[in-house]
Length: 486
Ligand SMILES: Nc1ncnc2c1ncn2[C@@H]1O[C@H](COP(=O)(O)OP(=O)(O)OP(=O)(O)O)[C@@H](O)[C@H]1O
Ligand SMILES: [Mg+2]
Image (tube, rainbow, N blue to C red; front, side, top):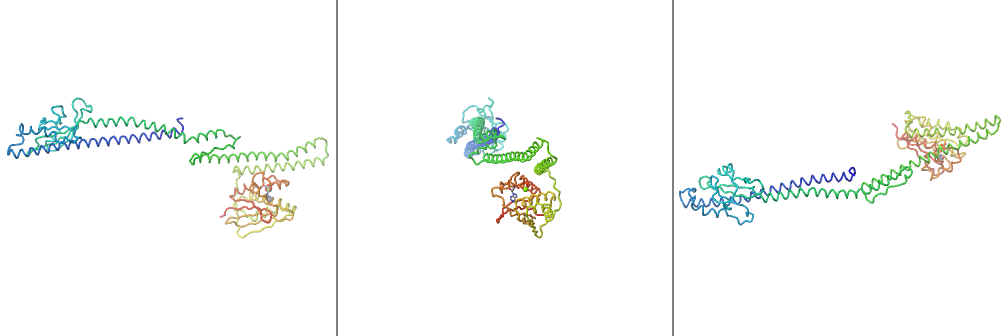
């Protein structure tokens, strides 16, 4: 289960989702926090500056009215009448509802507060100094009662100056509680939601991965049933056009190839046994007959002669099979020399001239200019052409002609050996290069059906192409085309 692709995909997917969601949550949290803070700071500044402006206007009017009296002298005078109104300035804005305002004197002592005489966040010494120098300042102030959200305040302090230096300080403040609460809620919600979303998506992911991989599971079941004995079994390709479909198709194609090679291997063993059995049966029969009673020297000689012929047949089959096996295993070390094709073919024809004469078949040569020599193993190439010539003579009627043409096909040397025999039945044509394959019409003549298989192996080892065709006027032609030589 934990090693399944399904689990791994889901796990990676869930991990990626968890990381993405966490990053997203952090981003949302921080941007909310920032906007809440900015919003709060703006509110505080707006309110405090409003009060400070009004206070400054009042101080200015008073200065004009009172003439040379300093603003500080107004203490205990008209200021105390106007201060309670000042601290409630602009409160009609609903967002200002929880913003409180205090007016302090230069020492930081409270002169008036919108909240009455209740505990308020005191400005730190440093802020006080700064404001008295003429700059407004923000602070986050925690009351001494401990730092639960209710006791944390955001404060903005700004100077309200008469003509000479800062005289009053206007402080606007608000509890950070609501913002903290909202942020806290968001934190809790995200901490709970992220794992839940990840788990849910993971579960869905597992489910969908299971559905997507169902064809794989069914394919595995079928594959488990396939053995050497039932290679004909095929996977049922899923009705999709995805990778699983491709896999099933490829696997089926591979099974077909395997089945073919298994079958041909079996057929081959059967054929070998069959071909060897015939001469062995003959030998055995003759030997048994010979042993039944005493024979004359002449009779023994005849039997031995016949036995010798059968052993020669067996040797030939075994020798041919060995050659084929060595080609199959790429054990044949080819000699690389320049072979004159014309000479080679004339030599081969000469060694078959006896048989040709016996069968009354004439050999004709036609050589084209520039049919270059080929690079290859002379012995092997000779064996190739001997096989083709042997067939051409063997399957020609008496009085027939076998033509050997050496020419250039494209830029590669080629040899075409044609005869005037019966040709090869169309149904057999695709198979004649297979081992032990013989057209029914030639069953009566001597042969094992290995000659063309060997010829093909030799041609392939020389990167040459070998093909068979029937000629229109009767007879067949075999062509060997070598690659261009340099
Ligand atoms: N020139 C040809 N004319 C007609 N049929 C041919 C010719 N050459 C080959 N064949 C057919 O192809 C089959 C295979 O040829 P191949 O040379 O492999 O076997 P073979 O000649 O029967 O036996 P072997 O060559 O092993 O003695 C032959 O049995 C024959 O039916
Ligand atoms: Mg042959």
